[in-house]
Length: 388
Figure 1 (cartoon, rainbow, N blue to C red):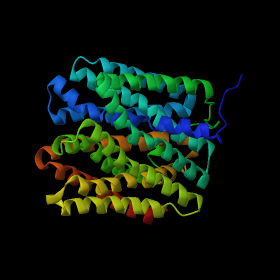
Figure 2 (figure 1 turned 120 degrees about the vertical axis):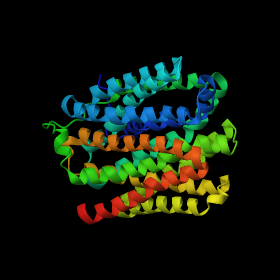
Figure 3 (figure 1 turned 180 degrees about the horizontal axis):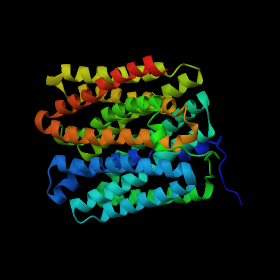
Figure 4 (figure 1 turned 90 degrees about the horizontal axis):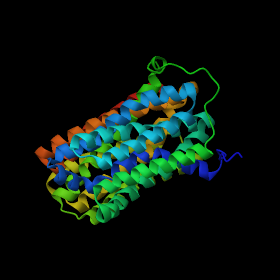
């Protein structure tokens, strides 16, 4: 009996949104538990932040393999394998006896999560074109934007109930559930065309240019994500429960940005408007943070951080659509290349935040954000002039 979901049904969009939300769930859910990890293994704050960076490295590097493979053998089989890998990574992380094993588990988990993120985008490009694809990407962004909103609070509840290891056990089970759903209801969507090579995508300047803009914007956001536990739990002394609520409030900016983008997409607005507003808004927020360097209290940081997350909701669907628009025969590899660029810059952001926070405290997080937000605007201006 055929149990597949039709692409026009809301259940199909919800499934893709959940797959695309795996990275945010995997990163943000574990944030409340970082102090426990640090205490159990006897490591410093920059070292515990590596659990985020190693996830990003695994996520970034595996995308190239996943994307190219899915263009050749199909989205469904590769996605099932990736979700299995994600669950194994969660299990290894939850049972880790040392920080080294935990970092290995996080790397494996990141590699598996890449399948959900890359192939959700590739499936949209397989099935939809033009403004319909852009609007569908915005809807999926709305769904997966819920992950960073609920993940820290959910992680806090599990942390209080069973400790940090249970968080990774929950993620492993989540991967298995998604694997079962995909196996039952997702049909193959890859178009019957000869797949291209990665070298061909590397010769697509438009794809690379928009990919770079998205990568710099993601790094700006990830500076906040990796710096939030250090600032909110460490410097400002919030409890785990308070951290979950504050992080959820800030992360809701992504939902707001995605909702605005869906609204303007459905009314035929060009992508340059929401894209430019998001990038310039993020740059202005970091500038305001540096001007207020002596007054970085929670009431000051909240609106600045919310502007950063709002920018992600505005930027991500538009740069993804623009980067993949002209390479429908290489959607998997194209999505992978974009994702790899984004996640590797995200990993770099995690390293930079650790170093900057040690030297400058909360201001160091703002400076790190500005180091990515300003080049993002410069790159976008160049892209608009050259490739539109």
